[in-house]
Length: 334
Image (tube, rainbow, N blue to C red; front, top):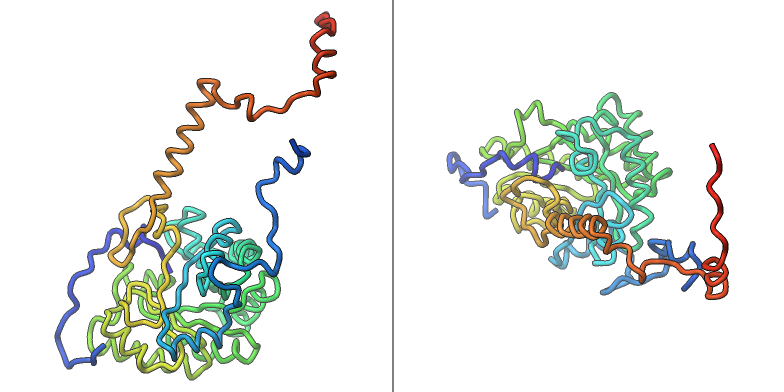
Protein backbone atom coordinates (compact mmCIF):
# COMPACT_ATOMS: atom_id res chain seq x y z
CA UNK A 1 0.00 0.00 0.00
CA UNK A 2 0.98 3.59 -0.45
CA UNK A 3 -0.16 6.39 1.78
CA UNK A 4 -1.98 9.68 1.40
CA UNK A 5 0.99 11.64 0.10
CA UNK A 6 1.07 9.56 -3.05
CA UNK A 7 -2.69 9.82 -3.48
CA UNK A 8 -2.92 13.54 -2.78
CA UNK A 9 -2.76 14.44 -6.47
CA UNK A 10 -5.67 12.18 -7.31
CA UNK A 11 -9.30 13.24 -7.62
CA UNK A 12 -11.73 10.38 -7.22
CA UNK A 13 -14.90 11.02 -9.25
CA UNK A 14 -17.95 8.91 -9.91
CA UNK A 15 -17.32 5.55 -11.49
CA UNK A 16 -18.49 5.06 -15.10
CA UNK A 17 -21.93 3.52 -15.38
CA UNK A 18 -21.33 1.96 -18.76
CA UNK A 19 -21.93 -1.70 -19.53
CA UNK A 20 -23.93 -4.29 -17.64
CA UNK A 21 -24.48 -4.13 -13.89
CA UNK A 22 -21.89 -5.94 -11.78
CA UNK A 23 -24.22 -6.65 -8.86
CA UNK A 24 -25.25 -5.14 -5.51
CA UNK A 25 -22.03 -4.70 -4.85
CA UNK A 26 15.49 9.25 43.26
CA UNK A 27 16.22 5.97 41.71
CA UNK A 28 19.36 4.73 40.09
CA UNK A 29 20.36 6.84 37.11
CA UNK A 30 20.29 3.93 34.67
CA UNK A 31 16.69 3.16 35.66
CA UNK A 32 15.59 6.79 35.61
CA UNK A 33 16.96 7.24 32.10
CA UNK A 34 15.17 4.16 30.71
CA UNK A 35 12.37 5.16 28.32
CA UNK A 36 10.36 1.96 28.56
CA UNK A 37 10.20 -1.42 30.19
CA UNK A 38 9.69 -4.51 28.00
CA UNK A 39 6.26 -6.07 28.21
CA UNK A 40 5.67 -9.50 29.57
CA UNK A 41 4.58 -12.00 26.96
CA UNK A 42 1.38 -12.48 28.94
CA UNK A 43 0.51 -8.79 29.13
CA UNK A 44 -3.16 -8.21 28.33
CA UNK A 45 -4.47 -5.55 26.01
CA UNK A 46 -7.15 -3.13 27.23
CA UNK A 47 -10.12 -4.99 25.77
CA UNK A 48 -8.94 -8.56 25.28
CA UNK A 49 -5.83 -10.70 25.56
CA UNK A 50 -6.98 -13.26 22.98
CA UNK A 51 -4.27 -13.84 20.38
CA UNK A 52 -5.50 -13.11 16.88
CA UNK A 53 -5.10 -16.03 14.49
CA UNK A 54 -6.16 -16.69 10.92
CA UNK A 55 -9.01 -18.98 12.03
CA UNK A 56 -10.24 -16.16 14.27
CA UNK A 57 -10.28 -13.75 11.30
CA UNK A 58 -12.11 -16.36 9.23
CA UNK A 59 -14.68 -16.65 12.02
CA UNK A 60 -15.11 -12.88 12.00
CA UNK A 61 -15.99 -13.03 8.31
CA UNK A 62 -18.57 -15.74 8.94
CA UNK A 63 -20.07 -13.73 11.79
CA UNK A 64 -19.90 -10.47 9.81
CA UNK A 65 -17.74 -8.94 12.53
CA UNK A 66 -15.50 -6.22 11.00
CA UNK A 67 -11.75 -6.85 11.03
CA UNK A 68 -9.51 -3.95 12.03
CA UNK A 69 -6.05 -3.50 10.53
CA UNK A 70 -3.35 -0.83 10.55
CA UNK A 71 0.24 -0.47 9.42
CA UNK A 72 3.09 -0.02 11.90
CA UNK A 73 6.81 0.35 11.33
CA UNK A 74 8.56 0.64 14.71
CA UNK A 75 8.38 -0.74 18.24
CA UNK A 76 6.66 2.21 19.90
CA UNK A 77 3.85 2.61 17.37
CA UNK A 78 3.41 -1.15 17.03
CA UNK A 79 2.99 -1.47 20.78
CA UNK A 80 0.37 1.30 20.90
CA UNK A 81 -1.54 -0.17 17.95
CA UNK A 82 -1.44 -3.64 19.50
CA UNK A 83 -2.59 -2.35 22.88
CA UNK A 84 -5.58 -0.75 21.11
CA UNK A 85 -6.67 -4.30 20.14
CA UNK A 86 -6.23 -3.94 16.37
CA UNK A 87 -6.61 -7.38 14.75
CA UNK A 88 -3.97 -7.21 12.01
CA UNK A 89 -0.74 -5.22 12.00
CA UNK A 90 0.95 -4.89 8.61
CA UNK A 91 4.55 -3.79 8.16
CA UNK A 92 3.86 -2.25 4.79
CA UNK A 93 6.40 -1.33 2.16
CA UNK A 94 4.75 2.09 2.53
CA UNK A 95 7.47 2.54 5.16
CA UNK A 96 9.65 3.58 2.25
CA UNK A 97 7.55 6.73 1.94
CA UNK A 98 6.51 7.49 5.52
CA UNK A 99 9.68 6.34 7.32
CA UNK A 100 12.48 6.61 4.75
CA UNK A 101 11.27 9.51 2.60
CA UNK A 102 11.22 7.73 -0.75
CA UNK A 103 8.84 8.93 -3.46
CA UNK A 104 7.35 5.47 -3.91
CA UNK A 105 7.51 1.96 -2.46
CA UNK A 106 9.79 0.69 -5.23
CA UNK A 107 13.21 1.41 -3.63
CA UNK A 108 12.43 -0.55 -0.44
CA UNK A 109 14.70 -3.58 0.01
CA UNK A 110 14.26 -6.92 1.75
CA UNK A 111 16.89 -6.01 4.34
CA UNK A 112 15.01 -2.83 5.21
CA UNK A 113 11.72 -4.70 5.48
CA UNK A 114 13.24 -7.34 7.74
CA UNK A 115 14.73 -4.73 10.09
CA UNK A 116 11.44 -2.87 10.45
CA UNK A 117 9.44 -6.07 10.84
CA UNK A 118 11.71 -7.27 13.63
CA UNK A 119 11.15 -3.97 15.45
CA UNK A 120 7.38 -4.25 15.08
CA UNK A 121 7.47 -7.87 16.22
CA UNK A 122 8.85 -6.73 19.58
CA UNK A 123 5.85 -4.45 20.08
CA UNK A 124 3.10 -6.82 18.95
CA UNK A 125 1.72 -9.52 21.21
CA UNK A 126 -1.99 -9.84 20.37
CA UNK A 127 -2.41 -8.89 16.70
CA UNK A 128 -1.62 -11.04 13.72
CA UNK A 129 1.62 -9.70 12.23
CA UNK A 130 2.07 -9.55 8.46
CA UNK A 131 4.80 -8.08 6.28
CA UNK A 132 4.87 -6.79 2.72
CA UNK A 133 7.05 -8.57 0.21
CA UNK A 134 8.88 -5.58 -1.33
CA UNK A 135 9.42 -4.91 -5.00
CA UNK A 136 11.92 -7.28 -6.67
CA UNK A 137 11.78 -9.75 -3.75
CA UNK A 138 9.51 -12.17 -5.66
CA UNK A 139 9.44 -10.88 -9.23
CA UNK A 140 12.48 -12.74 -10.63
CA UNK A 141 11.39 -16.31 -9.89
CA UNK A 142 9.20 -18.24 -7.48
CA UNK A 143 12.10 -19.88 -5.66
CA UNK A 144 13.57 -16.51 -4.74
CA UNK A 145 10.17 -15.37 -3.55
CA UNK A 146 9.91 -18.38 -1.24
CA UNK A 147 13.39 -17.77 0.15
CA UNK A 148 12.59 -14.12 0.90
CA UNK A 149 9.26 -14.99 2.49
CA UNK A 150 11.03 -17.50 4.72
CA UNK A 151 13.28 -14.68 5.92
CA UNK A 152 10.25 -12.77 7.14
CA UNK A 153 9.07 -15.75 9.17
CA UNK A 154 12.41 -16.98 10.46
CA UNK A 155 14.35 -13.74 10.96
CA UNK A 156 11.59 -11.23 11.68
CA UNK A 157 8.78 -13.22 13.28
CA UNK A 158 6.09 -12.42 10.69
CA UNK A 159 3.02 -14.65 10.70
CA UNK A 160 2.01 -13.90 7.11
CA UNK A 161 3.35 -12.14 4.03
CA UNK A 162 1.52 -9.97 1.51
CA UNK A 163 2.16 -10.06 -2.24
CA UNK A 164 0.73 -7.84 -4.97
CA UNK A 165 -0.74 -9.15 -8.19
CA UNK A 166 -3.45 -11.42 -9.56
CA UNK A 167 -3.42 -14.74 -11.39
CA UNK A 168 0.24 -14.21 -12.28
CA UNK A 169 1.05 -14.75 -8.58
CA UNK A 170 -0.95 -17.96 -8.19
CA UNK A 171 2.09 -20.26 -8.44
CA UNK A 172 3.97 -18.17 -5.88
CA UNK A 173 1.01 -18.23 -3.50
CA UNK A 174 0.74 -22.00 -3.84
CA UNK A 175 4.46 -22.52 -3.21
CA UNK A 176 4.38 -20.24 -0.17
CA UNK A 177 1.35 -22.08 1.14
CA UNK A 178 3.17 -25.39 0.66
CA UNK A 179 6.03 -23.90 2.71
CA UNK A 180 3.56 -23.20 5.56
CA UNK A 181 3.65 -19.43 5.00
CA UNK A 182 0.21 -17.77 5.05
CA UNK A 183 -0.23 -15.39 2.12
CA UNK A 184 -2.28 -12.21 1.89
CA UNK A 185 -3.18 -11.24 -1.65
CA UNK A 186 -3.35 -7.62 -2.82
CA UNK A 187 -5.50 -6.56 -5.76
CA UNK A 188 -6.67 -3.34 -7.35
CA UNK A 189 -4.33 -0.43 -7.01
CA UNK A 190 -1.03 -2.24 -6.51
CA UNK A 191 1.68 0.38 -5.84
CA UNK A 192 4.50 -1.84 -7.08
CA UNK A 193 2.81 -1.63 -10.52
CA UNK A 194 2.99 2.16 -10.40
CA UNK A 195 4.68 2.57 -13.78
CA UNK A 196 2.46 0.11 -15.60
CA UNK A 197 -0.70 1.75 -14.22
CA UNK A 198 0.57 5.22 -15.08
CA UNK A 199 0.20 6.48 -11.53
CA UNK A 200 -1.89 5.76 -8.45
CA UNK A 201 -5.24 5.25 -10.15
CA UNK A 202 -8.47 3.58 -9.14
CA UNK A 203 -8.67 0.12 -10.74
CA UNK A 204 -11.62 -1.97 -11.92
CA UNK A 205 -13.74 0.91 -13.18
CA UNK A 206 -15.09 -0.90 -16.26
CA UNK A 207 -17.11 -4.10 -16.44
CA UNK A 208 -14.20 -5.96 -18.05
CA UNK A 209 -11.68 -4.70 -15.50
CA UNK A 210 -14.04 -5.56 -12.65
CA UNK A 211 -14.52 -9.09 -13.94
CA UNK A 212 -10.76 -9.52 -14.21
CA UNK A 213 -10.34 -8.46 -10.59
CA UNK A 214 -12.97 -10.98 -9.50
CA UNK A 215 -11.25 -13.74 -11.46
CA UNK A 216 -7.87 -12.75 -9.99
CA UNK A 217 -9.30 -12.89 -6.47
CA UNK A 218 -10.79 -16.33 -7.03
CA UNK A 219 -7.50 -17.60 -8.52
CA UNK A 220 -5.48 -16.38 -5.53
CA UNK A 221 -7.95 -17.92 -3.09
CA UNK A 222 -7.76 -21.23 -4.96
CA UNK A 223 -3.96 -21.07 -4.75
CA UNK A 224 -4.14 -20.77 -0.97
CA UNK A 225 -4.34 -17.07 -0.08
CA UNK A 226 -5.78 -16.54 3.42
CA UNK A 227 -6.76 -12.86 3.18
CA UNK A 228 -7.26 -10.38 0.34
CA UNK A 229 -6.43 -6.67 0.43
CA UNK A 230 -8.53 -4.64 -2.01
CA UNK A 231 -7.06 -1.21 -2.64
CA UNK A 232 -8.43 1.64 -4.71
CA UNK A 233 -11.35 -0.18 -6.35
CA UNK A 234 -15.01 0.82 -6.76
CA UNK A 235 -17.17 -0.01 -3.78
CA UNK A 236 -19.47 -2.17 -5.90
CA UNK A 237 -16.58 -4.29 -7.18
CA UNK A 238 -15.15 -4.80 -3.69
CA UNK A 239 -18.58 -5.84 -2.44
CA UNK A 240 -18.87 -8.43 -5.22
CA UNK A 241 -15.40 -9.85 -4.50
CA UNK A 242 -16.19 -10.00 -0.77
CA UNK A 243 -19.35 -11.94 -1.57
CA UNK A 244 -17.56 -14.33 -3.93
CA UNK A 245 -14.62 -15.17 -1.65
CA UNK A 246 -14.69 -17.44 1.38
CA UNK A 247 -11.58 -15.71 2.79
CA UNK A 248 -11.82 -12.24 4.41
CA UNK A 249 -11.30 -9.10 2.38
CA UNK A 250 -9.54 -6.04 3.83
CA UNK A 251 -10.34 -2.77 2.12
CA UNK A 252 -8.45 0.47 1.69
CA UNK A 253 -10.30 2.84 -0.57
CA UNK A 254 -12.67 -0.02 -1.43
CA UNK A 255 -15.84 0.85 0.46
CA UNK A 256 -17.51 -0.44 3.64
CA UNK A 257 -18.70 -3.83 2.35
CA UNK A 258 -15.28 -5.43 2.80
CA UNK A 259 -14.84 -7.76 5.77
CA UNK A 260 -12.31 -5.36 7.30
CA UNK A 261 -10.50 -2.08 6.78
CA UNK A 262 -6.86 -0.99 6.85
CA UNK A 263 -5.20 2.42 6.81
CA UNK A 264 -1.62 3.60 6.86
CA UNK A 265 -1.09 4.73 10.46
CA UNK A 266 0.62 7.94 9.37
CA UNK A 267 -2.44 8.91 7.33
CA UNK A 268 -4.69 8.37 10.34
CA UNK A 269 -2.43 10.60 12.49
CA UNK A 270 -1.73 13.35 9.92
CA UNK A 271 1.96 12.56 9.63
CA UNK A 272 2.13 12.49 5.83
CA UNK A 273 2.86 16.18 5.04
CA UNK A 274 0.19 16.20 2.31
CA UNK A 275 -3.58 16.46 1.92
CA UNK A 276 -5.38 13.24 2.79
CA UNK A 277 -6.69 10.95 0.06
CA UNK A 278 -10.45 10.58 -0.39
CA UNK A 279 -10.57 7.31 1.55
CA UNK A 280 -8.59 8.55 4.59
CA UNK A 281 -10.23 9.69 7.80
CA UNK A 282 -7.89 11.49 10.17
CA UNK A 283 -8.46 10.76 13.84
CA UNK A 284 -5.70 12.94 15.32
CA UNK A 285 -3.25 15.68 14.35
CA UNK A 286 0.05 14.28 15.54
CA UNK A 287 1.98 16.64 13.28
CA UNK A 288 0.72 19.68 15.19
CA UNK A 289 1.25 17.91 18.51
CA UNK A 290 4.88 17.16 17.68
CA UNK A 291 5.58 20.63 16.27
CA UNK A 292 4.14 22.28 19.39
CA UNK A 293 6.06 19.99 21.71
CA UNK A 294 9.38 20.50 19.91
CA UNK A 295 8.81 24.26 19.70
CA UNK A 296 8.09 24.39 23.43
CA UNK A 297 11.28 22.46 24.17
CA UNK A 298 13.35 24.79 22.00
CA UNK A 299 11.93 27.88 23.73
CA UNK A 300 12.55 26.45 27.21
CA UNK A 301 16.16 25.62 26.37
CA UNK A 302 16.80 29.05 24.85
CA UNK A 303 15.29 30.82 27.89
CA UNK A 304 17.13 28.48 30.29
CA UNK A 305 13.86 27.36 31.87
CA UNK A 306 14.78 23.78 30.98
CA UNK A 307 16.23 21.90 32.67
CA UNK A 308 15.07 23.18 36.03
CA UNK A 309 15.84 21.95 39.52
CA UNK A 310 13.16 19.26 39.20
CA UNK A 311 15.00 17.77 36.20
CA UNK A 312 18.45 17.96 37.83
CA UNK A 313 20.36 15.50 40.02
CA UNK A 314 21.97 16.58 43.34
CA UNK A 315 24.88 15.52 45.48
CA UNK A 316 24.13 14.28 48.99
CA UNK A 317 24.16 17.13 51.51
CA UNK A 318 27.56 16.19 53.00
CA UNK A 319 29.26 15.93 49.63
CA UNK A 320 27.67 19.18 48.49
CA UNK A 321 28.93 21.02 51.57
CA UNK A 322 32.46 19.69 51.05
CA UNK A 323 32.42 20.75 47.41
CA UNK A 324 31.20 24.25 48.27
CA UNK A 325 33.99 24.74 50.81
CA UNK A 326 36.69 23.20 48.67
CA UNK A 327 39.42 25.54 47.53
CA UNK A 328 39.08 26.36 43.80
CA UNK A 329 41.81 24.85 41.71
CA UNK A 330 44.24 27.18 40.05
CA UNK A 331 44.05 27.15 36.27
CA UNK A 332 46.86 25.28 34.62
CA UNK A 333 49.60 27.27 32.98
CA UNK A 334 49.93 26.95 29.21
